[in-house]
Amino acid sequence: MTLEQELANLVPPKETVLTIGVFDGVHEGHRYLIEKLIHRAQERDLLSGVVTFHPHPQSVLDPNNQLPYLMSLDARVKEIRQLGVDLIALLSFTPEVAKLSARQFVTLLKKYLKMRGLVIGADFALGRGRKGNAEKLATLGKQMVFFVDTVPPLTIDDETASSTLVRQTLAQGNMEKVRKLMGHPFSISAKVITGNKRGHALEFPTANLDISSQQALPGNGVYASIAYADGKQFTSATNIGIRPTFGQGEKTVETYLIDYHGELYGRDMEVEFRHKIRDEQQFASPQELKSQIEKDVEKARIILNKETK
Image 1 (cartoon, rainbow, N blue to C red):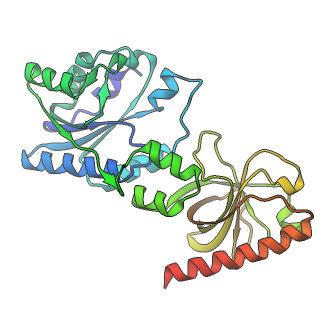
Image 2: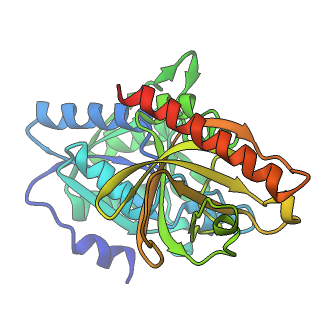
């Protein structure tokens, strides 16, 4: 389906104010921008709309340097919708779309999405060669009769909230800072798959998650986490890493659900990462590892019990 065909399926009932972006993670900076968008649309009795893309433009423009995603497409759309926008235009980003000039792209937005205005961040740019920056779009707006509002970036603790900063902080395992930047705990959702049963042998059976290689993850280590499975919430401890005690292997994500008794294979599970307990370590023996896991689980229980009081 071409871009015009996708847009033709989205024609809104009245004129709109739009913002455009990937919005990976729907972090606090994104939320701030979308709040401004909704307010501007309501001021003018127009519909508010978010134009977003899949896949990430960088995966098309530079396939050898793909960014790990912070949030699945479904979760991203759900989060944006919950912010209260009237319209979400999910568009396929293709090499053909990448070739469109800024003028060509906004012409399509005016034609199909009835765009009357754009609300953008100060560093926003669209179109071939990213030539459609704020200044260029303001000029186009005067020529093509739409307004452009440029919103200054949101700063948190003197740093600009961005998906790049969230990824960097996530890789450091600083889940408290990630939570502050995103406005909610970082989480992943995946299907539980069969592992090598080492957790069972250590008397700490874990749920092994089938994680996409493109999913952004916290840095290797053990985390106090909350797991959602079978419609219930469980205190848990999650390990991310290559299990060096047993010889280095592929990176895995394994969650031990504290006080859970049952079978989860084949089911979907969501894991929220709350606090890092320790870095990944290599132990001299499985027994030494088991002893450390006991301490990790108890620490996770204490941390999470404090959170819920």
